[in-house]
Length: 141
Image (tube, rainbow, N blue to C red):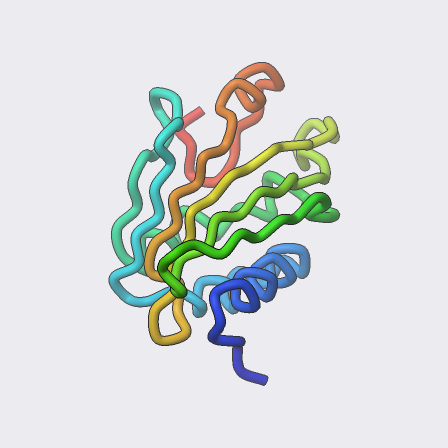
């Protein structure tokens, strides 16, 4: 089955792949020149990933660090650009190494072109990870 192409449907599909820990299929949703940005990333964490390869390297070991169970409270807002959505959600699960609970609130601005993710600005809360001592997904911590 091919991935959906409408931005909201593609995003929902991407969340399902994260829950399934299918990182290869998740990365396959990206355009070759995709851009992932973390405007609030603390020092030592990546703020910008350019290209599918960089995104793949960053996300490759995500399931080894965070075991996601669900994305409750998912709200997807359309924008004046039909290819861009704003997403509000929580990611809930556990930290693999410590078994500590993981509960992160996210706001993301996501753009899709030709059925692929091209831009993803992830406004996650860096204080939540610093307080829990979490290290994951390509961080140097």
